[in-house]
Length: 444
Image (cartoon, rainbow, N blue to C red):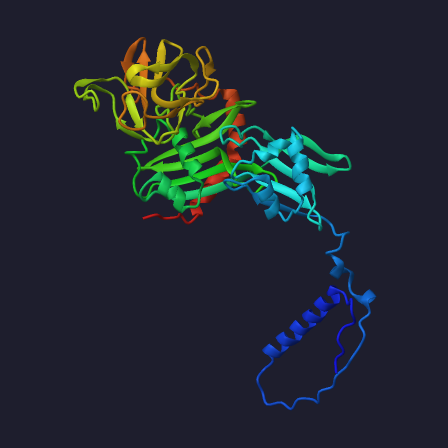
């Protein structure tokens, strides 16, 4: 008969015995069911030499290498909760972090961010990495953005250090076919929604996305995404590199080209600049709820009056951008306008943005702003029946329809620039051409 294991027999040996038993059971379960004479049963008793147990079975010992894990911060998380999910049982580390001014930033965790920790077999944290500050899609064109704090265990307690965030970049290609709307086509093709918004911005003034799109229109796009290295955070769309958009039988192209280091814009394949002096839509892709009119029944005042601007309906908090380069002339409240911004541009042009929920941080009179820069956020302050942006365009003091005013475009490429433009965008044209054979996603 089989003798019971001696007292103090290690758990490792028991694990080996259990594993062998499991193997035997598995073999029995998979044997074919045939009438075969079984050999006689013999019982063999052998002593197991502990020194012969493979070293791999001691991996749970004190000398095991630390393991590295990452966890996404959830809403309401504390550092202790995140450490628990990381497999760390290290109250001492938590106390050390709480007592260090620089490391206390870890106690201000933001939902969606990633915490990465190196934890040893005893549950002690050896090092921990956390990114503070968000990656903004409007700023990821820079080689680095934000910062990362690292906390390491040391003989004297803990050591903290900070370093810039290293971004990983990737070029992605996509194709979509319009069945109902641009956003529906983008979603059906598995392309990030931010691409649709950026396409609408690039084609501002070229395509009316509320009226021009037809069923069967096709979009080919090459774009860049970035993400923090070694992070669980989803990638962000940083920039459209090139697009080819067939809209209602007309072809629209755009290629990103830097005319000088750090200064780029979009050009058509023939070198025509797509940059306008002013954006027609200062709100990210939105719907016009009320147009420019000499007589309109005011929804609140109840009588007919001029509507000296254009209303763009959008959810509260949607970014509002400066339609052109200029200087802020006024930031504050004005009766029916609610929260309002006025910007003074060249050649006697002024723009006004009203009913804002709030202003961009640091915005003040006298500050210079660039075209496309976020200056405020959609709201419903003042005489407003719902969240929208009221946008006015004034030429030498007179209000004009911003959707119809004729404005000059940027100068075309010079002869010396054309050769460089053709060389630097040749690869993008090739990628866009390759998308002709891609089976397009459909959304009905």
